[in-house]
Image: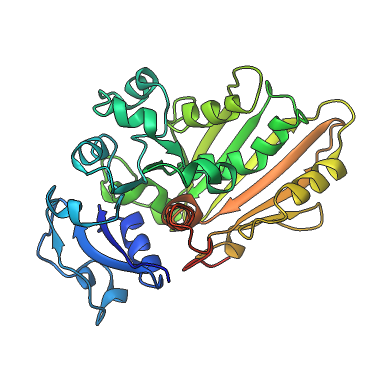
Length: 343
């Protein structure tokens, strides 16, 4: 018989934290014991989202290092740098599933360069496993520190890693153009100094050539290649709350074409419920993946010979954040992988 797991969520009132709670409420082997946030402590979760009305949940409280000794897992959906402290005070029997960038990068110096802060948990950084569920299942099940990927990297890495492993594409000329609903920026979107007033009717380019997900994408692709990879990546915010689509332009290596790429990816992910591969005839779109943990990948011919266009759509708050975190939770504790998750 499966044992109920006690869990805590730090950053429970943010977009990803709220999504986590909604998913975990459907999980038959979860008991939500603590909900931590930096402000509005003492409030019920219905204060932050009306969907929680009449649902029994702990009141929001300040983080308590003694309390997390009582839980099996703590999910952290915090600004970067804040999960370091939690990893340092939790006991060895607790699993940390981190939705921030704190443990995604293997090199502390790269973390410090891109996030402009010192890495304060280097010992734990070396233990962490990058939680791209379909790629790293075996290692996820063995660790107690799981670094969930960013939303943009998830949409880009799932189609590209198998192709890099098989040397089917030119690793030197990858270009990714990604668009995300504004929830991807977190609640700082309401800061009018950072974002325009008309965000609901506005498309904007940002983080050009310096987005913090770039070293994460480069790092993970390089692990599956014989050389260091750096891709061209440009993100945009679009006027929809959730949903993300990445359009990736690749040059094919000799003897490969769109049909071979399609068949290879179809076979590679044939046992993965959440990754679905489509060919030229299907329009990949965000509406098909909203509120699911799925990634839809489309393979398209380019007008130029030897080039391919790959489209990849996810819900940035689910497969790109809370859903993948729960998928990793299921892998870690050997639950059915799609428990509480919608494909």
